[in-house]
Image 1 (cartoon, rainbow, N blue to C red):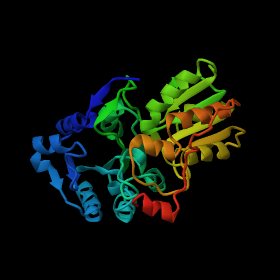
Image 2: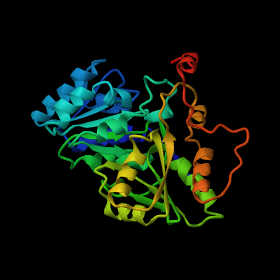
Image 3: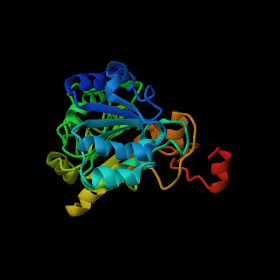
Image 4: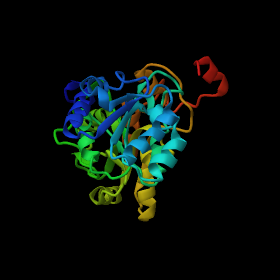
Length: 331
């Protein structure tokens, strides 16, 4: 589904810099890898290469914001969240400083193993008061997300996509608004992030026999206050969440809290990384091993419909890696 767009964020960041002259881009040692090199070359006096010192880097963003600048930090998601978490809490979230963190390589899209796979970042960032959390699902999102979050007064975390990104949506991202890709409430599939394309493919196929299956893409994970979306969740018989993240602290947890708070009878089925650390490998292998591939998505939806599926000879996914297996896999 959709054409591939090469490096959509590269051009978006450059244009954002042209439009807003107080934008300063800060990077560690991943300027080109995170598509900030165009901005660096166009505005060298507004780019800071801080090196591999993420804790100090985050603290510097707070100081820049206090002086009226608008700092944007681009890096891999683990280096935007897990490594400098205390500094994010104390110097950005607590004083509600306006700064934007853009984290690439979310979840299992990287073969780099547990040190580089941010299956925890949504949980970390949604836990912070004053923090806005966004997850991009396609090229249009990456082209428009900076404009969408620019009015936010406090800090923002964006879970981004880099390189060749499929275009799934025509309309630009809007903060706090979901996108309905297929109408349906028998089973309502809710997806965020790079698995949106996989979910669309699977749901489109299943709807040939089960037209009551709906699909919604969610990009604003905090605040999760889209009232139209909440009403759809409450009206559904079953909600299936799909995410490239630990289910215990990501989209499934967020949706589950909404259902519980509203005393809903809606059944919740979660597709995502289970309670395990992850290891390295190709994207296809990792998605299959940890249960977020298209066939696992299909199995979850069909199961919610009461349709039996043949899983003989297939991985159940969500593989728990023991210490011995982890070492063997190169953790």
